[in-house]
Image (tube, rainbow, N blue to C red; front, side, top):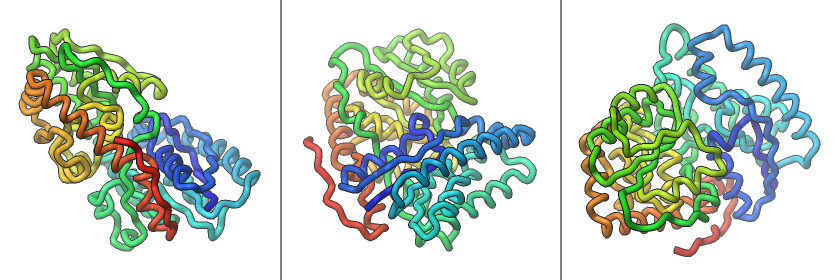
Length: 368
């Protein structure tokens, strides 16, 4: 099968479509990428919703990217399947125009309306407009890829039959990292965009409550809840704040820690996702501590520690327990790594997509 990974996606910001590409290659298919990154991250797109006068800048840049995509797409062989990368709500229409009856797969990790609600952009006509954009994108795709069963259920009923649940998984490089040394204070890492979904402010409160305990935090990233997180952490000194880390360096940084934190938000979206960082942290050999939600429990079972969403006291207690129980910590690290290798490598996660496309492939098993 010839597959074209297509669109204005950015794998450094949203690695999901890169995982799909790796998995399809591992399954023996010919994969080519045609990518012209738009350069506007999710936060910038949401700002445009709040400030509509910025939208023309998006349109101009999108037109330039589409010209590059059109030139690149027409130079290569005709694909059997086109996979449109995440945030491809507009790109999917270009794919249909360029490739006619070829099967078009939309990586619909999350809807535009859902993202805006999570980031508290709800006023006026914005939500109806975004729902219309989502609906048009879904209608243009032959197959719609979502990440959890909960997200599949949020799709309009007429699109659910064309949807397939493909876990986000982790790129290959996350499985290739060396774990940090044992002993010393519990090393805990969080990285993300500090959105309400991620519940970073809850982590900040837990940091303050663990002052004086043998727990050290690395907090990577920034976003709308960063200031609140800093305030909640107060005068805690056992924490390193980093604005961001290049994508190529992030796997090694995470693997040097004992625990990778997931998400702790309390909103509806937070209860429907299994975030990148949970898969990636497990692949890198970290123990996982995250919120107690159905999709995360279903994904990792007893290979993670779960706390109620938004409960800083429970989060602090869970981390304190791991700091005091190295055997329990070692067991959780091993279980998380095993779960990632057995279920969430690129070649494993694409199996439902291949089945949906009517293609069978025997995935390559990794050693445990």
